[in-house]
Structures are given as structure tokens and as C-alpha cells.
Amino acid sequence: MHPMLNIAVRAARRAGSIINRAALAGGGFSVSSKRANDYVTEIDKAAEAAIIETIRKAYPDHGILAEESGAIAAEHMEHRWIIDPLDGTTNFIHGFPQYCVSIALEHKGALEHGLVYDPIRDELFTASRGRGAFLNDRRIRVTRCARLGEALVGTGFPFKELGRMDLYLRQLRAMMEKTSGVRRAGAAALDLAYVACGRLDAFWELGLSPWDMAAGALLIQEAGGLVGDLQGEQTYMDSGDVCAAAPKLFPQLLEALR
Image (cartoon, rainbow, N blue to C red; front, side, top):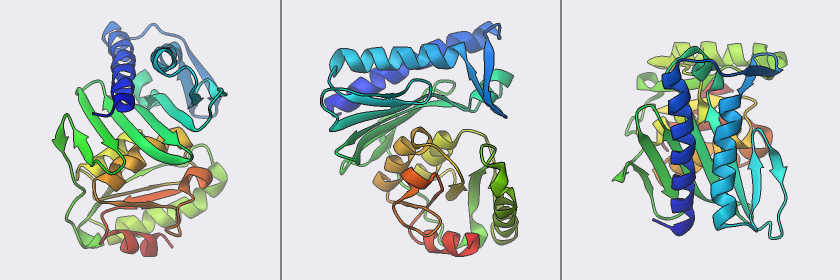
């Protein structure tokens, strides 16, 4: 494993321990609202602090973009860590067991390393550019499904962009009519990891943030899949609109969403 990815794994496991301890305690932590339907807990903040501390100890001159702390500049911004300490906070608050830690590293704007860690199931998804994608050290690949009509597709509601709900509902109807099923579990980073390992055949969502997508996108690409925006272009990290699927499904997914 690459040394930088190894540091990310160490950071993710530290965060996962904090999250699991809080979950086992059965609540009692503070919750605040960043906006409508968008929450943060003291556990998000503690997990993020642990991740940043671990990374800073190893690479003090690297930049950071984290969900709760925002952008943290550094001396050498060629490297930037993109962190979501707890993707699926609403699930976590309610005890719904679908949330994760997501950490990615960019070098000169290109994703180089990424991981998604599910602390409940102790499932660690990792990828490095050009080295493949893995689940707990086992190589993973995207699905072999070749027809959208046979595909199980993941999605997420655009709760941060309610003004686009009409567009999303048209897309959802198309997916319900043209696929074998649609699932919305509430943690985009974990959904993308599920595409990488073949548990989902495809995924789309509108209005995501970079920390929701970065690690999962690299996982899918290294597992043989394709990732793009609604036009299939590589602007999803900027637009927040993402589509992902196995190569034969990807153009079918884009066509249906249009």
C-alpha cells in the first residue's frame, strides 16, 4: 500500500473508532443544523479533527478540504486531502446503519488515492491511481451488468437543492421505469463504493460536494467503471452532479437521465 494511502487508512480507522463508540453509547451527543435537512454533530467534528491531526502529523505541508473545517491552506498546495468525516450524518443520528468515512488525496488536481470506510461493517474500500481498487485487501471490479433494464441503481435526493426537485423527479421516474430497481440509502460515498464492488450497477445524484464524491469516484475508476456529470464529462467535482456505472451501462444511464 502506498505510504500516503496508509496514512489515510490510519486516519479513517481513528475516525471510525470515534463514530463506533458514539453509536454504541446510544446517543447523547449534540446535533446542530447547517441548513434545512443538513446536520452536523459533535461526532462529525471529533472524527474530522482526528483525521486532520493524523494527516498533519505525517504531511504538515499538505492542503486540506474538509466538510466541517472547509479549506485549510498549506505551504505546498500540490497535494490536497478531501475529507468527509461522517457521510450519512442523518442516518447516524437516527441509528440507521449506513454511513462512512471518506478520504481522498489530489495531486495537482488529479485524484491519486482514496478510501471509503464503513465502521459498522469494518469494510475498507481503497484505491490508488493505476493500482486497482480493493475491499479489505480483496480486488474489486464493477458489475458485469450490460443492460439498464436489469440494473440496480443507487441515488440520493437533492435535499440541498430543492429548486431542482422537478428535474430530479423526472429522472427518478425514468429510472423507476427503465431499471430493475432504485435504492436511496443516504450516504453517497458508500453508494459509490458499492458501485465499485458491484453491489450497485450504477448511481446518480445532483448537488453533491467534492468530499462526497472524490474517494468514491476513484474507487469506481480503478474498479473499471466510468464516472461523469450528466453529460458524461469530467466536471462532476465542480458541478456536484455525478453519474457512475459499469462501461456498458454508462451511456444507457446518461441517455435515460436526459
